[in-house]
Image (cartoon, rainbow, N blue to C red; front, side):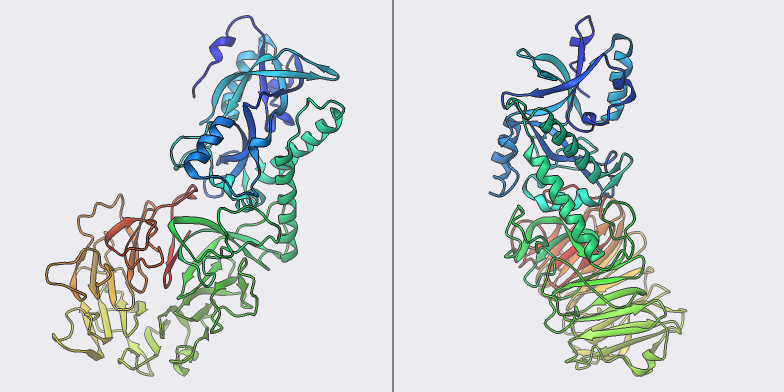
Length: 619
């Protein structure tokens, strides 16, 4: 912490200027001050802004909050010059010519103790500064300022990166609605984020009434507006019994699969026209979704947040399952794959099922697995993907997987079923595939456009169906177009996970080795090998790339591949027509690129990713 407190180490009186919670909630040591009165900074030097991260005060590392801070007008202007001007209807922080707060004159015997307590209270990331403050005491307005000590967090000159409390959050200067949603739901060690705003607004209103005859005392319209919008947002959420799901989105939004629509009818400032935004390409963008009928009873003042146990993306729709077994879907609904008839893209459509164990989303159909092992499918049934086999209906289903035109599941009695389009022999027999000798169960199934992959608990990979792009690895003879029988693709080092796109496949081991095979014309398997154009043999991919930690999982889009590390970093390669790799353009990549977050902090790293047709959602 930088400090200028040496100027106060001798006889001159020490004033503290509080502009946030110190206005209405002084620390015990400050309550013993010799004098407590109001004061204000003027001359247009500072302005109170609601753009400060709070991860250990009014929020946590996983659900951060927003508190107020003082920024100089020059700092705001520099930030806007670098990052662009805020929307025309955003809060105009620059209009505030002065900041009203509370002055505390420290007694000599509590001075050092009070300063030490403030250093702890204000946490890390803040600096001490010396400012000139005009005193307001009853009807007595000081014509000459007093020297005071100010704690504030400064705006960094570079892009906002992961940091502790005190970090400036430029995103909320541009996106008022996101700020309101964060503050309505965040709770930290010091309490609910919303109460921080309401208490300060109440105090400012009292001061406004107290000093209304004198035009010299400044007003704070922005805090009043923020407080009003939080209250309105909470009323809406309580009417809907809604919870909030916070996530990060990227890629195609033509059908609302990123849930970027504005849930507020009034002209609340957003960083772009969300109603017309058809894609996000500059990096993962933090967003939130209203999930109605989540909270049957409202506990406390804050809006509850959704704890997700499953997150999935389909061709043009998305979905989430909460830990309490409720499910919401959103996005494209042209084939009934979302359900309901709502056209409001700002909130999810809640399924009637209250005991959902998991979901899987195909190109335009949806599979829902319930806790009792029963299965429900709906959406496009042109290829029979929603026609659940009778054997499956009579079984207890434990795992599900939806593909572009097929559906698959694994049952408790250790059988794997695949149904839907069977033109390329990618389906199972009516009695399913029994677990092969040498294994005790199937642990994963994946459906490509024309082929199927299965993984057993011995770490072996099996497949059937189309082989024209090498989807079955070296398990079929060169030139073979398909296999009608289940063939062994891999019997080497034990595999723990598999996935596939339309025509490419990946598998990985517990220690993070990744293999890939099949079509690679878009870069979906990373760098091409000499002589391989559009069809790659089974080989190690991303070898020697230099990940920062172990590979946690690998997931495929139709013609892309994403890698999630244990530390939360996300990498992608392949088809990028909709900006779904997050590099700011729509050019395909033949090698892994860093899928970064834009305009926000990442909530405690990425723990889960879901890949759709041309979009990505992460938690």
